[in-house]
Length: 387
Image 1: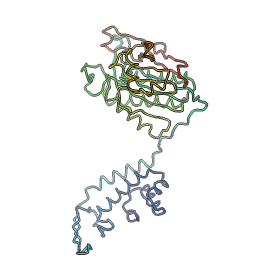
Image 2: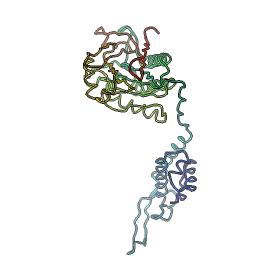
Image 3: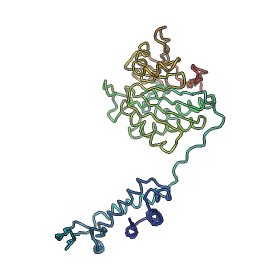
């Protein structure tokens, strides 16, 4: 099929380049490869050009004559003969209504054609295939506001961004040269789930800093920055976002944002599952991740075995990680349970509500390194109170 008739309806050099390639090849797939584009994107571009041509009265096999300047196609009435031949045709037109949209679309295409896509980072050298470095993030509460005179420490969106960056930088620098990394947000990464500034289930009024749109922007940037830092040290990075009681819906869009952000980075895998319980297997190690507001720590081994019986059977060292309580606690399962359940401390201070109840905890984050054959090789702790 010849697409040459579409040339006069091209607005950009990129569109003309595609038509040049189509003139030299037999298929759209080959033309897409020559131009360095996805085949479906080339098809979409051709459809837009065909529509633009048809609106000017040019559609091979349907309309044979162009419309007057400034007119677009409104409709076609065709009279067919007994043998199916076209005997007469009435073309209805009106002044251009889509010209502005077409021009805007062409402008966007031209802008995008000049933008260099994000290049994948160069993978590190001399990493160990036998090691996994895991970075669990306790409830970080992006968007929470705390006043030091009331709570003991200040906290706002800027402090949230800086404290996560400082912790990740320290832990990445201290981590062994593991090939694999697991970045796990254990829930409540955002303090509020929407503009109501209340917890979704209990409707508790929250102390928040700045607008929701700014919070989700800074939170997304903060998590993406963390992934980039891990990519500098580790060859493969898996990202997990667990729904929390403060951000059950935000966890889903945060995963989709990360998936889109790193869509051209083959070294990043983002788990977009909406499940409350997410799992990762590394050799003989089984890691279960959940927020901790639904099941108590001592009951986690049974949950792990019931949800993932095959993974349970294939592993010998099993851990369950939770957040929610804002302090560290570790439960070694009974002999017949076969797993260690642990909740993690957090980097933020207490908010006004928690401080009024006397809740305070050590502000920290960890990097836990596993050996593929099973077990923890080492653990590094970042203590925010010592910086």
